[in-house]
Image (cartoon, rainbow, N blue to C red; front, top):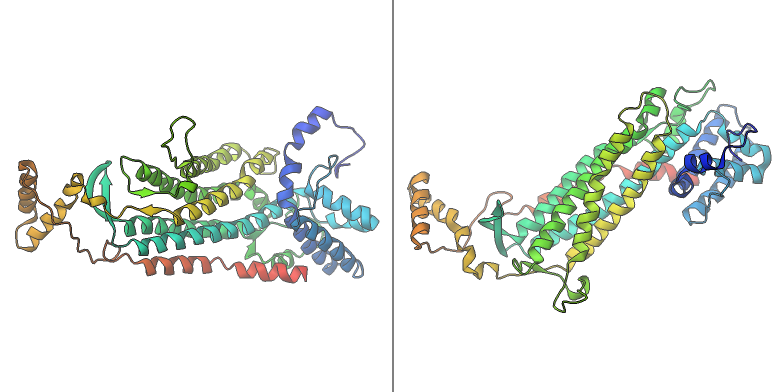
Length: 443
């Protein structure tokens, strides 16, 4: 059975091709589809499209389905097209004609829009939590190793003194900015499309503000045509923000792989966090960070895939958008896995505290020597030439102490300021508003 069936049997190959992965992927959306139906029927009762006595019966049945969905027991049957159809068929099976009333004033178009928005909100919350934990770990490692110097590089050439405090803290602040960008994507997603129906509204006297409030949205997509046009656009915006987190993780993973190699030996992983070789008994490979790098690079390609799918579509709904769902929905789980395993592995990462004992890093301190001469009154360009001449003559002998005090430098990492910045950004998501709304809806 299909909601749109008119007595004509669809060719089996055509049906298989057009359904695609909807049954598999719509399981992601099942809890959110049910929540949306609860808000929708509550609104329908308020405008007289459902009897007062019918509402508690529908809500009770929907709450039972929601529990099944949350517990992983909700299934989309083989002859059912999608999650929207499955929910309606289950209600009709249990409640008879009453179950058929829930579709009044809706289309599957605005249902899937709503499901995606609710899914995105909850999934972003999980990414924010995982990212926040990783930031905390990085800041803790930054504090722990703030006095351990390491080489800084430009052009992959030894450049100036850095520290593990700076290195860990840099990625913490980078992820903090990534959360700021994600918060903008969250705000764009956190707008209610329900009531836009197939993209042109409904002749029923719907109360869209009521469903907006019931589901804890910040506001609604007011224009019903734009609500439908937002399908694909929202996924592209959100995927771009997630890809920025993935880019930071990928760069971090590359650093760890590089620094873990014998030619650097800056860091090491415990043996239980590495893998071996089938023929080389000495190998301890950082596969975990290589896979984080590979998976995060894959994630960074998703915004482009979505853009290429939607960028030549006119206004209105098209089935091309089904392909976007297949690309987009698994993205959150993949990124969450990378964030979680990176947090675990970085927590166990060991730092070599004696890197700069090696004479190959002596020239790191050339700028420090130039600056000392400048403080003695020698013009900078003259001091630069003097130190350069000592290096060429082989007479350069560095003082390996570093005294940096300005904000964000080796001696003043501003760890607390980065932590404050992160906490402020996380608070501004206002997840509590959607939590309160969903809690009240399920009460």
